[in-house]
Length: 348
Image (cartoon, rainbow, N blue to C red; front, side, top):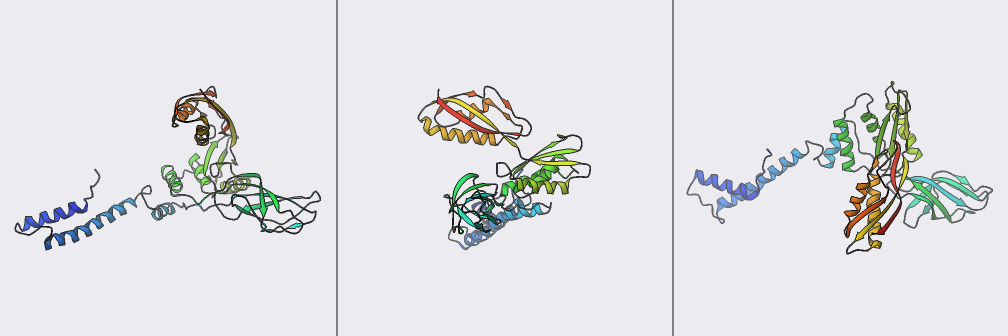
């Protein structure tokens, strides 16, 4: 039974009651000295109760404040993961031989700034592709061939380039850190269990989630799939996790392979009957909801057709829904990650 922390008014009432029990003639009216002393004492006692209540919350990691959550995690060798930087390439055009120094800055219309991380020169074909990284760590949208403008174009280099960028994650949140800590506490180190490989992979900054497939390539092998920021990991992140797992894996494991899930586009065709809304207003809401559902499935997950209909029915203004495609539940293969493909929505 939890302890019921008394409030200020209750504490003062108890104080005055006890005073009258000891001295029945004591004045406890609101303008009396006894009432003033009881108010001051009760205020202090209430503060002590609240402090004890706060201290009790710090004893368990799922109710602890961030600094105490980090302390719980540190006791088990778990630290909050720092933000990682998105990386990619910049495709330049210009005069053959023109040099592009490292640190050349380009900006996207969204305000995102990136800079080259290596030197290059325009080829005889008039192009050059150079590695780049976002100017600041953190999660960013993925870009594929997006136009960017150079802050100061080097001599002989066109001021516009094409950006391809992916990766980048924010500093680990309290809930993400707690999730890793609880995973450790509920699945303590076991010398190479599935939980061990999942935990080791998630310790690498940039890894959001990991899935383990033991014996997939034969006896003594383990495959580990990872995601980053809710999407696919970069080759650099895969290499970092591979190196870390090679260092952590038990000697009995002859091979561990770190892989990216394979996106499995799932086309959805549906019809809805509406009341008080329009198809134009509903379509982006429905698409976002279905994207979130499919992205939340595990690699090898089951796309439940009835669940798709239920999600559409949950939207305001939808009184009936019918999913035509997929015609039945879809079971993805073990490394295939269902994602929303072409989405068609019509009036029923």
